[in-house]
Image: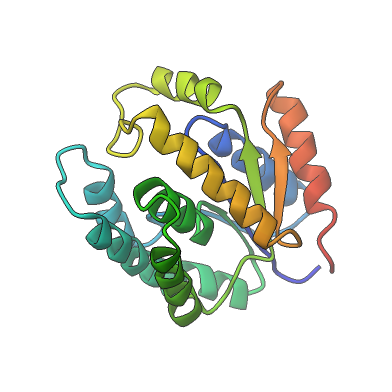
Length: 208
């Protein structure tokens, strides 16, 4: 099978980290070369921007946040994602463009059509490669936040109010409706093994 670009999305505490690790392990067992990465981050500059973006002490406006996310994404694409795909490796990424729509477009801007159009424009102009498949891990907000609360001190995004994450969830749902062929909803409830199997079955549907 040719190199594939798979992204994982979801609100806080849905289990993306574990699901990604399990998928990468299983792919490697089949002999597939896999690059595991994340956003924001995944390249030297992008990791520096990540540290600033998630720092609770960072004070920036919503537009600046969005543009910094896309700055990090551009560097990540050109230094990590595209080189790996061009070398025939699979790329599995924790968050990508759909998080920008959900977190900035819906979480920050409450689904304002003009703001969403601007995000779509950034994607169209500055994202040369879209994912082959996006796996949206879906879990009730309260359950996910309870899980996230056990990880330690909240970062700048995790510290947002419940209403923010309800809007983010709406954003992911809207994206899945807009792109049903790319975005697959995965029930993130149940055991790690059960969720991992749902993810694996979805990935088996990728065209060769």
